[in-house]
Amino acid sequence: MDHEHRQLVATVNALYDAMLEGRGMSLVDSTFNDIVDHAVAHFQHEEKLMRETAYPDYAAHKRQHDQLMAEIVKLQRSFEAGESIFSTRVLQFLADWLTVHIKTDDKALGGYLAARP
Image (cartoon, rainbow, N blue to C red):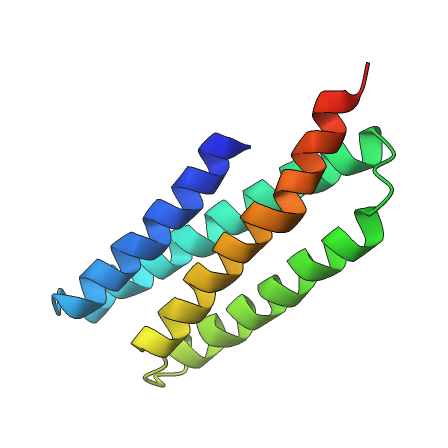
């Protein structure tokens, strides 16, 4: 999971860099799609582990995943509709959400998994 977390953070950082450097909307679009792909795969992996191990906070953790994915899908649809949605505020939201989620919820999940026999 740590590798997946690093991939997600690196992809958000790559999107930020692409935007700041004005490398073109096709690169921004491609990088944003990478974020969506990484997030979906990571959340599926985490949720499978939580179900398999009867993680007691599964429902709350999954709700957080669902909320972020709903926000990401909304951003993706806006972008595809031609709206200029990318700003440092949006990227800061993604980076902050990932950082807080990883440091709190995913850390709790990791502790639970590590304590299992």
